[in-house]
Length: 345
Image 1 (tube, helix red, strand yellow):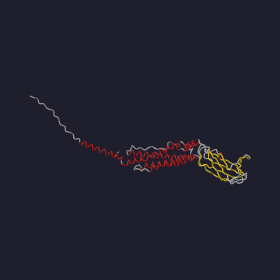
Image 2 (tube, rainbow, N blue to C red; image 1 turned 45 degrees about the horizontal axis):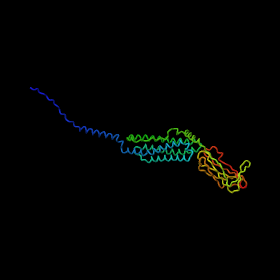
Image 3 (cartoon, rainbow, N blue to C red; image 1 turned 120 degrees about the vertical axis):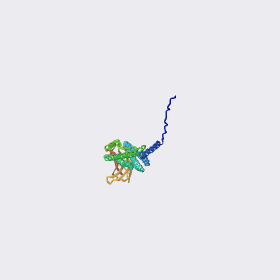
Image 4 (spheres, one colour; image 1 turned 135 degrees about the vertical axis):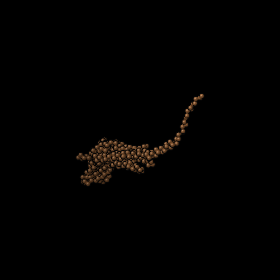
C-alpha cells in the first residue's frame, strides 16, 4: 500500500501594473516644474536680461570714473612737481573735469529698465556730484597754488572733497540696490563693481590740505629781476656826486632794452615790465608797459621800449625800469633799476 504524498502548492503571483505609478510620477514632475516657474523661474523673466544688460552697459562709465579718482589721487600726491608748471597743472585738472563729465554723460545715455529706476538715479547722481565737484576743485586748487593766503581756498577744497564723499554714498546706494535686484532675479553671474574716491576723512580737512600745499610750496623759490639795460643811442657813464650819469648824444627818441631774468626755480607767467621817463624840468612821466607771458626757471628775455622822448640840453632825465613781483616772491630789491640820463649835453 502506498502512502499518499501531498505535493506543495505554489501560488502564481500576478504581475503588477506600473503604469499608474509612472503617470503619478509625471504628474508630480509637472507639478514641481510649475512650482519652480512660479518661484525661481520667474526670476529669469524677459526683463531680467534687460537688468543684466543695464549693469553691463553702465560698467564702462563706472570704470572711467574710477580711473579719474585714481588719477586725482596721483595728482594730489605729486603736487611738489605739479605746481612747478601752473599751465600743465591746469591742463591735467581740466582733463579730469572733462573725463568726469564724459562718464556722467555716458551713464546718463543708457536706457533704464523697469525695476532699476532708483538704483540708476543714484548712479547718475554720483557721477554728477563727481563732475561738479571736480570743476570746483580745479578752480580752488589753482587759486590755492597762486595765492599767498591759503586758508580760504583750502577750506573750499575741503568742501569740494566733501562732495566726492557724498558721491561715494550715492554709489553705495546704487551698488546695494542694484545688487539686491540682481539677486532677486537670480542673476548671480552679474556683479556691481566697487567705486570709492575718498579713502580717508583727512582728505576733507582744510588743515591737512593746507599742510600738504605748504610742504609742496615750501621747496619752491620765486624771483624775477631786471638784470641789464641797453640804451640806443648809447653813450658813456660818468659819476657825479655819487650818481652814475649816462651821457648820451642828443636824440628825439630813446630805445631801451631791458633784460628780465627768472631767478627762481619755478616757471612764472604774466609779468608786467614798465618803463617810466621824466626829467627835472618835466615831471609829467611818460609810461610804457609790456607783458611777459611766461618765463621758465633760469630763463631770460629782452623787453624793448621804443619812442621814449627825453628832455635834451643837458637836463637830468630819470628812467625807472621795473618788473612787478610774482606771487611768492620775497626779495624784490632787484626788481627795478633807476638810470639818470643826460642827452645833448
